[in-house]
Image 1 (cartoon, one colour):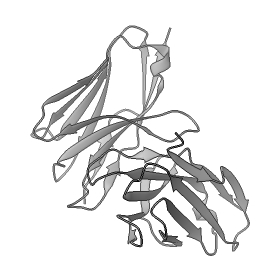
Image 2: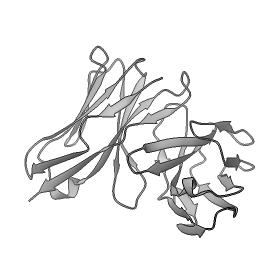
Image 3: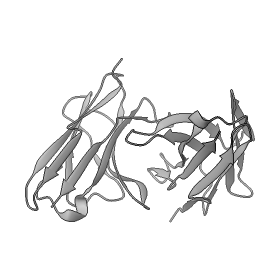
Image 4: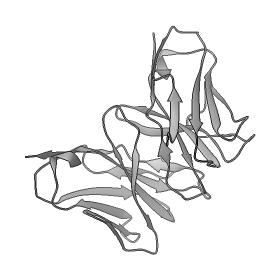
Length: 113
Length: 112
């Protein structure tokens, strides 16, 4: 069955630096991969979606890459701010083939001033 | 613009009691989902619906039932609650097959 791993449970960085979060998966490459942000006591909020034929996607300070050969997605936050502190979830969109959106366990990012 | 609304926000049940969690969305979305989130386990899909009147099992459906009688509502029922069902439950909706999910803010359920 499809497995997904977000390499770090927690990541601590200094304000202004670039945060890089990793998402690895096994088996099938999904047609789509999504990233969400979750704050304590709240539901996940969608950030970015990348398709298998796209190498990179950007939105303001956020950048996502998708390498189907390595079976990996990287999520970057440039010029990080304390307000970026949250848990970030990677999700493989297997809907239509495996029937499900499979979420990673998340990486908790802390940005220190 | 409410988005996805879940009720109740918190609930404590005794083992064997039943309850229904309500999810309502005002975005006219076709797809609706129920997830549970447990520490160290991530989000796991319980049941989902691809349209009014349809439901399907997800990864962890045992002990739960669902109904989608109206397009905007998706109900999750626990017929006989067990301590293993202590969790945070999230409802989500999406417009078309590969579109992003919109989540509610969850129901924290404790079963004693």
